[in-house]
Image (cartoon, rainbow, N blue to C red; front, side):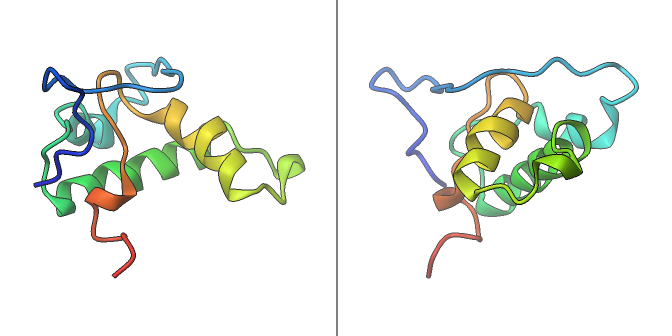
Length: 98
């Protein structure tokens, strides 16, 4: 389990902005993502990362914005697409550098 997303009190840290989603958009991905907190397995973090990237691509990235740097995509689109109270950390997923 990955514990890097906890503050000194053991509570989840949150950064960036939170995007509200309609009930129609809430579908399966949101159901999987809502319980994701620091300390989840790498596979669960993968599911959260995948869902947030897809949500960002679907809802906030437009063709006219491309090409887009990875840093701009991550901070301006992926982080705002995560559910409230969750932390995204690639280092806690199977996508981390070996």
